[in-house]
Amino acid sequence: MGAAPQAPRTRVTTRARDLRFDAGSLSLNLVATVGRRPVGPVERMGDAERLATWCRGVGLTPAPGYEPEALLRSLHALRDAVYDIASSLLDGHHPSPASVELVNGLAACEPPAARLELTAGGVRPAPGSGMLTEDALLSVVARDLIELVADASRRERLTACASEVCRMLYLNPPSGRARQWCSMRRCGNNAKAAAHRRRRAATAEG
Image (tube, rainbow, N blue to C red; front, side):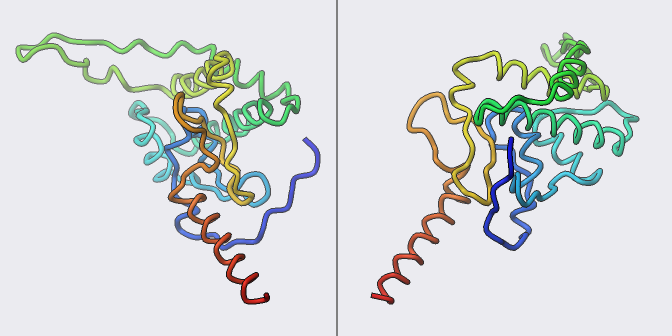
């Protein structure tokens, strides 16, 4: 991919460490657990508590008895592979064969089908049917990336935040105006404020 660009120096605030769930797909939400790629990475999912919060945020429920540290290591490895592959759709670099092999290998596990049960009060999801083993959870994420790559309309909507500090990967909405920023409330407002400061400085100098 060549030498990484140098981003402006910025403080690592609490907000910069916030988990993001607005990337537009499960696999991209995993990528977003690292902020400020590629030049100033900020880890957002580095412990068991953050892992549990992320799983709840994306609607995945690990089965009881899972080992948080082992699942974290596996998700971090998958995260790097997903970023390598997804970013290649934007900049044209060839993703590592190891990245493709990892995603394909994890996707090969068949996640269990959700089940329903009939009760006196009506039909409802069967208890525990949404719980995933580590292999099944990783498979769901890997399959999401494969579906993204296979869908031409979704590939066309993939973009990177215009902020040099952020560069978060996300999907633009299927209709309406394409977004320049991952979030107008975050990077968009920061860019507007920076532009305003530059205009004031230029006026003062003039």
